Image 1 (cartoon, rainbow, N blue to C red):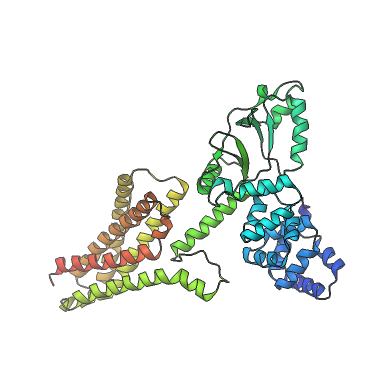
Image 2 (cartoon, rainbow, N blue to C red):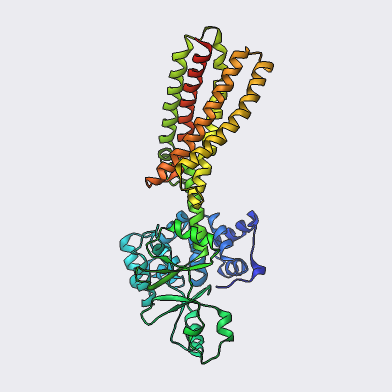
Length: 457
């Protein structure tokens, strides 16, 4: 459903939400519909997110199916799941009938297997139902689980006149026509059709004479992250999906890719922060605890390991007990450098911009760590000696330790994510607590080993 741009709202006020709730309480259906008629479906979803679930369900059942289906897709998954639980299979089927197949699959996949079948049985459009069943076979993490069946395709043997007629019929089922795909008699994708070329071609010309053979595509089993990389790289609004025999199966549009990119960014951010599960702020304390506790325990044991190293050297320090004052400096520097290096590597791996040679990348980080280490060590030497009044030999020791620790942290922050990626493990797990904790422990060890060698305690 196309929306008037003048009706799009960007700020939902508390007063508006209160007005909606009052109208729902009084069951003033006419005024509810009148009030919401000027709002975009995304705005309506935002309003319903702020209301009681029973109120939200009341509005959903009040709206017409076309509007309802759009609002449901904009809702938070938890809210949508609660509302779907209150709807019958027939009511859900009516909403799914209004959705493109990719959105329909997203919604129906949130239901139990038994309810999925009941809903599909109630879908009036049998072709739409069959498309949904076909798409449900694919995993969420491959192109097939992301694609929609709705597209515009033309046969290479059609004339321009026949092509326009067929396109008009197909376009009625497609929300937005991003591309026109050309297939042969066996439904194999062979190219794409430029709308400009179609408009200036002779009505009697055949599509085979005007289509463009070059067309980007992805296989139905392609990983969704790779699909996202391809569409970002070539600035594509849509991309066709084919099977191993190049049979055209569907298309993936940019709105779905934006969702993938956002979800991957959220997942990587949580992993980098030491959260091992996909969680939301409003999840239960038990679920949040299970997501956070494992990395907190790793950090605790890392801290105990660092404390053990400090304890083993503290008895022999004698006149150099001041070295303990600079332990936080060593730990903070090692942790920060490690996180910086791993973050750059993880980003490069995600965007396919990483140097394929591990040796070259490690050498680059070694050089960078050395340059940064020399700069920081020089500043630290001056500050500790002149501002803190530490002996010159102690200041030099701290400076040398900083150089060694920075280089070590840069190498670890680079090496670990690359190795994890080569083993098929999400490299984002290497950032945050993992890198910070490991660099803390190794940093303290290096610090005291250098101190022992330099100062002879």
